[in-house]
Length: 109
Image (cartoon, rainbow, N blue to C red; front, side, top):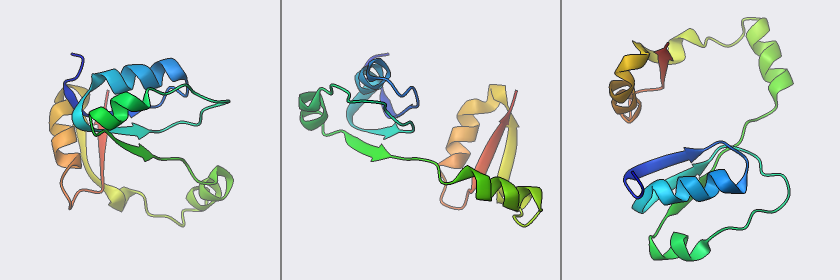
């Protein structure tokens, strides 16, 4: 499994999760950091450089105003959902999510 994924999302917020995510990536893969790290993390930058890994940071915006807009019904979230699939169709969901015209794909457990 190590070195076999094109994209890995690390949402652990800890150095061990980052290291494991990095190990799972194949060369020229993409690592998405979807968490906030507290303190400093020791990172194997040699592996990032040698394997030409792309790092993408992603964080959430302000929740309170967003939740208020949702509560008041001022944001139409239903029209943003392109598909809802059962969990056992997770591979198909990722394929759909990778298409330019797809906005959001939900997995139903």
